[in-house]
Image (tube, rainbow, N blue to C red; front, side, top):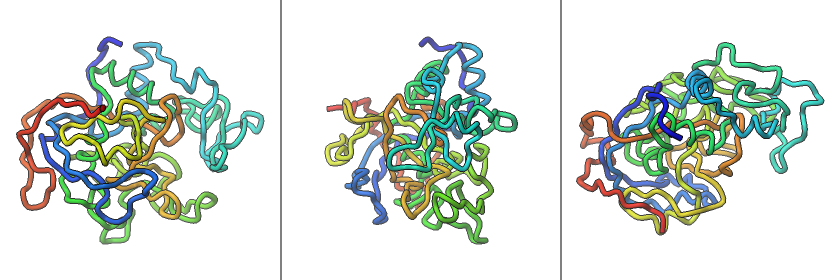
Length: 318
């Protein structure tokens, strides 16, 4: 698709850097392939400071007439406590994850089902967009989805090996939550201690050291790479872009449904995957592109993201 608009989301430039990618905290989920920790050199790039919002996606749809895969399919998954639909519109549950309901009439305009809408949600992340939908939007604004290495570098915010974008402690000094995840016995009771059952506005909580908001929690984020649980053992050092193919595309950051009892993936190193044609109520995206302004200085005392002269465009596919 040809470029049709300027990017409506604020961006920040991440300087060319070398960092340690992968889990260094001992929290790795082995089936997800979070290790080994390996040094990666990433050229300078820009990335959205927030996920793409409903308002931004609505402008794209108005200009292009794009219909998402959820709209073509006629249904999409909704978390069971959030369903806004008549019983007859609930088509079934997901195998192995009964908290998900396949709900007829669910799409980005109706994120909880046909009886829901976007009133008051313009600054929330757009959801029910597949990888294909996200890539189409990104191309329309002259950008792309971030590589997995770019995403992790940006999410870390300049911190060395920390669990989260702000450090290692989930709560702040006053006992308040720093991100939008699940509280309570999953999946039946969410106490809402962080203020939200599902999505929060994209500028909730605090940005990380690079100025990115909510890179963990709120919604999973599509990356450009194919997923391979064994990729880190053979990934190239310079600007890796993922394997040539795989069972799905990488998703990062966790979501409002993540809980440490089963899904401790609201960490900088955590990774998972989803089929490219698969939308859901807790999956969105942000875009990336060329560096847009002079690279900011990197604190040599607290960052593993040290500037580097390596700025090769070497692809990571074998």
